[in-house]
Image (cartoon, rainbow, N blue to C red; front, top):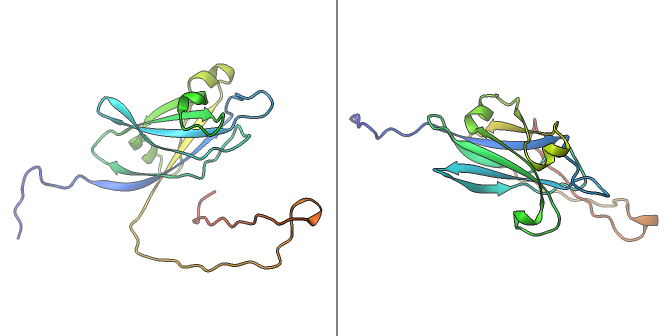
Length: 182
């Protein structure tokens, strides 16, 4: 039998997947609606580190982002998160080249404690001076380790041509989602 060694116990963790959506974002464009994307940061010591960013969704003030962020939730540690939302102004990877909409901060524990209902916060910043109702909602879902494999072989024939007057070809696609996703 093993002996107890102080300080050698594993830190309790859980893998969680974060989903992000926003509502009533400020319209930063003149002739169309904003093209929002979100950047997720995590606090490491005294600095913010970029985790990743979502895709850009064109022409909407109420985006529901498809990109999910997978993080390790450490039960005994306060993990601070920051979400910055921007209006895309082109393909540049530099955030300074895009219109800043707003920011929200919270801890990962606050999101996880909502048990799938989601944590909704106000977005503060540039966009809030134009619209003080803009919000961001973050939902955490615990990922369970599974060794199940699904293999699909899909095909399609005789699809309608969806371009003008039936000329050219369509660009068909299929979206696969897990149960419970929007």
